[in-house]
Image (cartoon, rainbow, N blue to C red):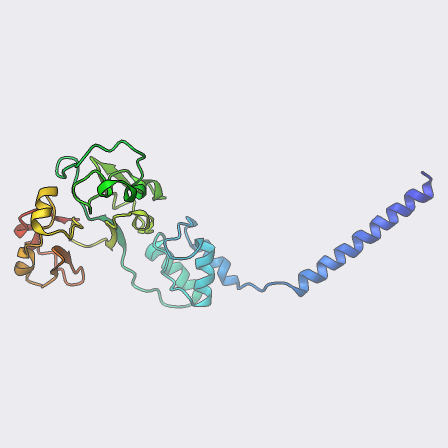
Length: 265
């Protein structure tokens, strides 16, 4: 190839490169998406776990929602009040008085207290138990299956299985709600961290049925209701529940419960 051909090819490539560069530069300016600087600042103030506990697709989604006014500044359950205060300062608003929450497993039916209908030897995933007889080996159809699907879902190593029942480490728990979502028995809920007492049972069976299935199951006797001085306890469908807003932490319900299914948390 002659020197003229080489120079011509180089010139063509150079012209094309300049044209493409100019085109991309103009396109970048013309189609530039304006972003609020506060969004980056809010994202930096979030913990970056991307757990989804706030209801958005990761921390970036929450940051965008906060800046748009679609989510409160204290919406991150992992960052808690500390992150909420930082974000409130960025947004120029007052931080809300968010109440710390923690996951609670409403079951105490461990291997000694809950009866087994049969020995299960299949794949150990709580979500698969809907396909096996009785919804699991335990006689109580509402009890914790103990296969640890919640353990696998927790991004903070805050839940584990002890003797067939899931247990929450309150100090590690960030209330992201992942364990709540995956539990097929709906045993796990988020309660205030400063709650004093809770009902550690989810059975809605009649008393005689519950008594046969588990030593600590709630039988809906109503003694807790009749003795609570603040009317914080109710019984519906043979199951007791505590209104944490009304509860004063006196402990009377624990003393009166004959099944010992109301526990200090």
